[in-house]
Image (tube, rainbow, N blue to C red; front, side):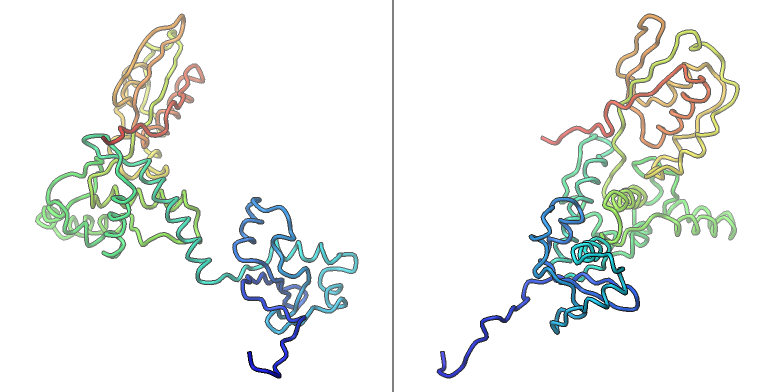
Length: 338
């Protein structure tokens, strides 16, 4: 070290810092925190404020070392507010300024959570086996690289219905519509343009909401054969009303398509009117596992498509006037791969 250079002993270098800023009373205030600790504090993981703050003080500018005067703090936050109260308010409500590495880490956490949710809810429609998160990720990357999936849909299998049972027209169907007239072709093209799209994971939306968007896009465009994993339900109903006739189709069967990720099975939710209560309940069940009469109650355990669950619940709660109930035993029944 060169002789004659004196290093200041009281200098504090903020090298690993995240700033939390808040504008109040026409003034902007800042506090200096450790990276990753602010998010842990706000999520409840970290409860000790001393582990979050680098310096227990409020600044007008952290980079310049300008501490906020007490008079300015009193004007902005009130004369009765202590320094700890002010720091706590900024920490909880302020705008977090994070670095590139922290943003990347947050994006990676959300991305992994989205992939795990999607991989747990979608299966191969033939084998009913789940896909790995890697395969789901590649399929979504394919959709996002092709403008959300629109181009892929145009180049998908011609004239064949999707594995999820959607009523989405394929390229062959659009060609047939063109032969029937410009109006039919325009309607088919408009329906194709309104298909769900996928542009990638972001940190501004909840992981569950993004997972539902991803499932809609995968089911609509079918870059790989996918379908929603079926739900396993137990339905019980009083034997006194099993043979009662149903006057009309439940109106909820039309609105069921508005549920989350229900776009893949709109065509399966419409059930024909008439029949008995038992017939109507069984019409929603894709596969019956067990069926028995226990005392004065009839019980059936079976598998139901997720898109039909709301219609079934509305029918059970409305048409039977509460004398039947549907209980979810498993939200997503899958067969694990070998």
